[in-house]
Every structure is written in structure tokens, then in C-alpha cells.
Image (cartoon, rainbow over all chains, first blue to last red; front, top):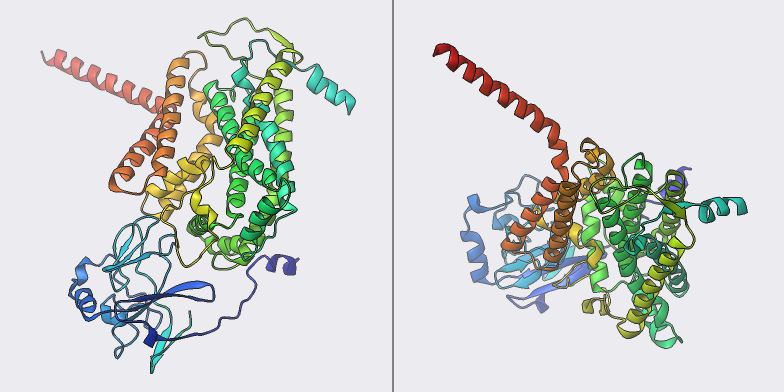
Length: 152
Length: 387
């Protein structure tokens, strides 16, 4: 009986790493890519965008946690805790599904806008306005000499 | 067997004053049978796979002779069946057909209504166009809010953590199995209707003298009329306006890297979709939809406290207002989510609940009224004494 029921659960899929050469993404541009069937945004942020993301007051964040898989679960949602690492602060990698109901948000100059129910995210992927309960998740990723490795 | 048919369909007595509009059940039954027939015809040409589903449906529709007919018939038939079902539901709520010991008939009927809705949802994902895919993603995310088992339920439903190739196979299987469960429930429903009889409905306030006649020819002719009307609408829509109920965005194959701007389900899910869309938190929306289904099922028990003939007009007014609220919700569900639509749908939902649950408040109102009267009497007595 157990084997019959266990087949109803997901069949085990092998999760492979995804390597991207980030040199082809110009500043201000966003790449949407697919890693094991999950859509992912890779954003090369301009200096001004980073500056605006850092001038936001911590009190005004709707979700105070960073939601970054590379850091501990208690890390706070400062911009420095959301980018790839300290030496690559212009790079932002987030899961491209809205934490509300899984739609892929549209890219705007100031961040993202979810067309399904109108959640707005800033350029750091943090929720500003709308029904989304949390910030967009940052998957496990690392950067070495322009090679971005993502393992969600 | 023949004896059963004879007692059930030939000797069966029905109220004499049956209005033609009350035969929506016949159209519903015919619609469901046609759905199964056209569904089999679509299924034999269908490939449940994320890469092939969209193209094989289009291929069958364009290259095979009359390949478009079963698909269009199935799609438009679904809308018409839901139309007939809503008409049947409204008629039975409006006439209070569930009273006088017909609770079991009612519960089996509403259960099959919910199952047909679930089947319809699984079917709407199968064409694997943009709208189908994203409606599936959005709806399957609502399963997560079920406490404790939500995550496992989602895994069983989707065959993984997200909507993928495994999902379409599962949905195809569910969409093929559930109609037969529905048919079994409907057989039970009809059996119960035949054993417990139909409600004698009349327009006037007081019960009239009841005259029952044989099912043939009074009922059969009216049924045939309704069925012919149904077939006429179905085939004229199929041939003249095959895209009457389809969304243009659904002609693009599913792309999981881009969500279209107007993700919405078919019109028959709209009131419930609007309820889900109104609330910010997922669990509130799901709770609202689930409780409205539970309310529908327990309607005979909710309205038990009000006597049948005394408050007919109040009851019918409240039923009309409730259906008006649901229609407004359906219209609001079509619009994009703004502050105004959220406010309007909240008003609709509140009035929906208020007008459907008011009979429950009658005992409380009575006790509160009695208490108030006692209080006033006490005060008056005290004032009199002091004077």
C-alpha cells in the first residue's frame, strides 16, 4: 500500500546548479532566467538605484526580514543583506515569483510591479505596497569573476 | 429493472403547476451528458504534457476534419451547463425546495455542485495557454493555506513544488475521474428526488390545493422544450460564435517566465474569484469561499427557524438580494484590483453574509427584545414607585 501512496508525492528531481556569465547584463538591465523550472531575476542595478534603495527608513519596511538563503533567517531587510555579496553590491538575484500567489512581476524602473494583484516591490525586491506577505526570496547564489552560480 | 423505470419515470407523480423555467434541471442533466460525450472525444486526441498539450489541441482543431467541434462543444457546453446549474440552484433556493425533510436531496445536490466546480477548474488548466497556466498557478497557491496538511496537499495536487509537466498529467487524470463521481452523486440525487418527491411551489402566499399528475405528458413536454432550447443555444453558439467564452490571451502557449496582465478564471468562478481577490491575506479569502459553500450546504438548517408560509416575501427578497450581491461580485471580479473595487467587493461580501444569515439572529433578537422590554418595565415601575 505504501509504495502506491508514496508515488502520489513528487517524484524526486535532481537539482542542478545554474551558471550565468553576468558580463552580458548591462547596468540597469534585468535578466529573467529559468533554474529547475523556477523563474529567477538577475538585476544589474545602477548607482542611483542602489542609493535610493539605501535611503529608505527601516521602520517603513512592511517585511523586516531579509529572506536571503545565504544569510541566517534572522537577518534584517537592509539592502546590504539582499544583494549577492559585499563586493558585488550592484547585483541582485531574486526568485521571480510574487510571494503572494506566484505570478511573475513586471520589471519597472523603481523595482517590480505584480500585475495579478498589484504588489509593488522596490529595487531591492522588498515589498512596498500590496497584498504580498513578504519580500521576494533571494536564492543561494555566489559570484566569482563574473560567473554567477545559483542553486535554489 | 423495467419495473424500477416504470415506477420512477412513468408512474412518478409531479406537481401539476410546473413552470417551464423549473425544468432547468433537465437542461443541466442533458448538458452534463453532452459534456461527458464531447469530453471523451477531446480526450482521445489530447496529450497531457506541458510541451505538447497546447499544440496538439490546436493541431486537432485545425487539421482534423471537424476537429474543432468537440473542443468548442466542450468549452461552450461547460459555460451553458454552469448557466443551467445556477438557474437550477437559484430556483430551488428561491422556492425553498429543501424544506420538509428534503435535506438529504439538497446536500447531495450541493455536493455535486462543488465537485462540478472542482472538475471545471481542473479542465480549465488543461489547454495550457497563458491564462490556463497562470490561473492554475494562482489557484494552487491557495491550497497552501490549509493548516497542517496544506503543503502535502499542494505536493499531491501539483506533483512537485510548482506547476509543471507532472501537474498537467495529474489534472488530466482528476478531470477524467471526477465527472463519473459527479454522475454517481447525481444518480443518488435523482433517486432521492423520486423517493422524497418535489416541493409544491405556488406563487401565492398560502398553500393551495395540491394536484399531482403523472410525469407524462405534463412534465415530459416541458422538459423536451427546455432541452431543445438548450441544444439550440449550444449549437448556434458552437457554429456561429465558437469564441464566445474564450479569452484571447489563452491563444498564446503557457510561458512560465511572463505573467499576462489579465489573469482571471472563466465567468462561472467569478464570484468566488472576487472573494479571493478582495482580501489581502490568503487565508481570509479561502475561509470566505469555503464558508459560503458550507452555508449553501447547510441552508435547510439555517432557515429552519423561520416558518415556511409566514415570511415568504421576506425570504424571497433576501434571496434576490443575495443573488444580486453575487452578480455584483462576479462583475467586480472582472475588473483590475484597485482600492475602489476592493471596497465595493467588501460591501458586497458583507451584505451577502448579512442577508443570508439573518434568520440565525431571530432567536437572539427575540431574547434581546424581551430583555429590553423587561428593563423598560422595571424602570417605569421604579419611577412609578418613587413618584
